[in-house]
Length: 586
Image (cartoon, rainbow, N blue to C red; front, top):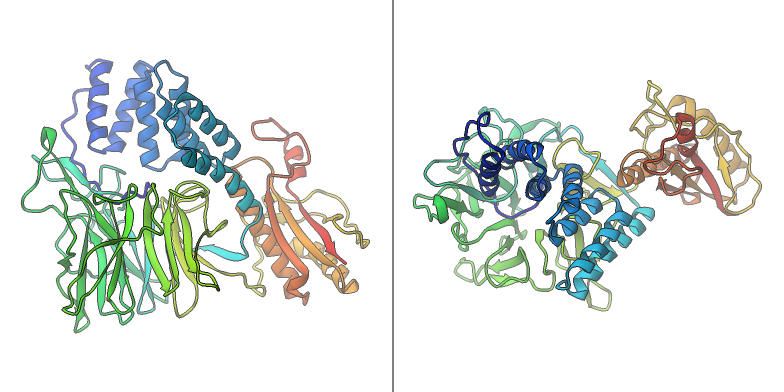
């Protein structure tokens, strides 16, 4: 879902009898639901209105509603419709380009960005360069992934959203909109916006149709429990941060105040707040509000507390910022009170900054959509160079993706990092992933079923020592959408092991390729994982890990005409699903 700071709660108004009203009344009701951020209901109504009459307004609103729900493929489809209809505005072209980028269609996205620039002349040169550079950078980074191991925390993640993890007493505390024991279905997104004449639904969040966020903890034995928070709210309870001693907790909260500030048409908007709680006798005290909370004016959220509890980083859209949401910090004075909020201008941009995390004194992580990235929110690191100058760098692929990547943190005890992402290939809306340096000697788990062949049927050429000459293996198979080494692939890998033992001076690259079907970004990830699995097996057979390098090429090196959208036989597609070894040094 879109990383907006506030958490929006909506209350529906009575629907008209759709069976007897004309298209304009359906459209009016859809607009009302859209303005209340009840996107699920709005989508249903806009679809009905569009079916009766294909208008640019309905198509545009459908694109926007799906974009806010982070359904990028549906958003792309509706923006594509909108830009073709009479009366479409340039903003639809811009959003169409962004949807293409988040669907990893970088070349098409770049073309639409250029199309947008040709229609309006208000975009600054810097913004133009950032948008175009992001498409180029994404292709470059995905072709040269960082040497890290990325894992989806499968047992923790589910069909709902999980995000914002933090370490507390060897447990992983996170926010989720999964169904919890009270019977409510929780969720994450932005602020409370509703018809002030009624209270919001306490079970269903209109933005998504799911429930509200709650905090959970995953124990070392993989059991997941509701995390106890002493707070009075039936709505969102967002991601938490803890001091090193575990005695203080800071988290985000959405609550309805006793006095509501009402806007036009009795619409009330309640912004996100930060609350803190102290632990006494192993129980959390009643939560207290943060000094800079102002629910009727702006949001404060994404808290990160320093180990000693004396500095708090947070995100806000308060007046005076550089962009949509900026990162701020406050420090405690001698009396234990929070001082002035300071805008962390060095990391902030004209975009939206999120998820501050201080790993150590000279290493700060955050997410933003305001710098050159792959699309959506990217994770960045600010660190100090050897000669003292601060540097800000994108973490690259696979830590980042064309979608939203955020809520980065590191377990100081294990060195394992965690972050959240709604990238393709996950289990739900947002999933939590772990990130750590590659480990070469993991055991290989055989898989029983055979569903997808990966390599072309050619004999192994036991190599000459000619550099960059590929060696294709016979019949290496993977289960569909999997990357575990099967028992029947071991025979072929053993041939390469023997080649490397017989030729102790050769170094090779293992390149894995996919066919063109599926998302470009996901194919990069899948091919990289498959290459790494084969490399781990070879290393486990006694080959020095320095002599073999895994490389996933996705669908960038097709052997035939089978590009995206081209109808091909299964045999033609199979030709592209291959694993090759290439001598890079002898």
